[in-house]
Amino acid sequence: MRRIFAAALVTLMTVAPLCAANVDPAVRRFVAEAAGTLTIEPDGTVSATTLPDELQPALRDAYAAAIRRWNFEPIVVDGRAVRALGHMRLALAIELKGDAFQRASIERVTFVDASGEPTSVLGPGAKMHPPSYPMELARDGIGGEVILAVETDADGRILRAAAQSGSVYANVRARDAARAQRAFGMLARASVHAARNWEIPGCRASVCTVPVRYTIQSSPDRAPFWLPAHEIPVTPEPWMMGVGVVALGADGAASSRFRLKTSVDGMEVLDAGG
Image (cartoon, rainbow, N blue to C red; front, side):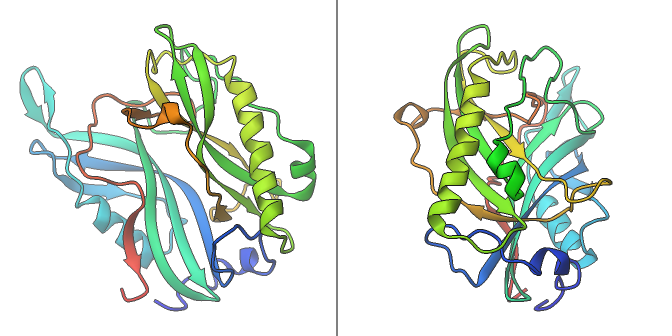
């Protein structure tokens, strides 16, 4: 497994990305958003799953094996537990040291009731106009993701918003940790500014999280599947702590049918010894 991903990631590794504070500079982290499906049996176990072809076969097998260990609350229709097909959106991560594989993990998952295809940020019933991309970062090829926590009123209007966590990613020459922190701050401020005018019917009188992504597309056809990423430490606001948080998708939607009992966030699926 030590060199299994070198060829697939060579184009991302030819330049050094930004460095974040308290991160081993020799370890490179890559993230990807992936759509997939899973079959949930009447007892809540997972019997099958599909994942994107962009995943290297050994890695795809490791992610699939981890997903088959998940357990759900039974899905009940007309008073009877049934087999169901679920559509999911996964946030995946892998780490390399040089060209040697270190670990793979599932950072987050959300479930959708529809076809599972990517949807506009202007989801059905939601008013979620996307933020403006900071011009300085767009010019320098710097992207990122802000996990935005929002508190809403009974109509789904935003009362307050703040960054809960996030990453910076870029295909640029090495820069210092302060630069990475500053870049993330710009993305976080743009996200909070946009969220002030959002309305999210799926989040009423609640605290919810929404991923806000800033992706630089490196070719006219498509962005790369794996993006170099660096987690940025964020101190949560007091109002985010000690409350149940509902994780929503980028379009402000999430399924209420699929209730996952297994803890997933940051779940390791493969390490260097595997």
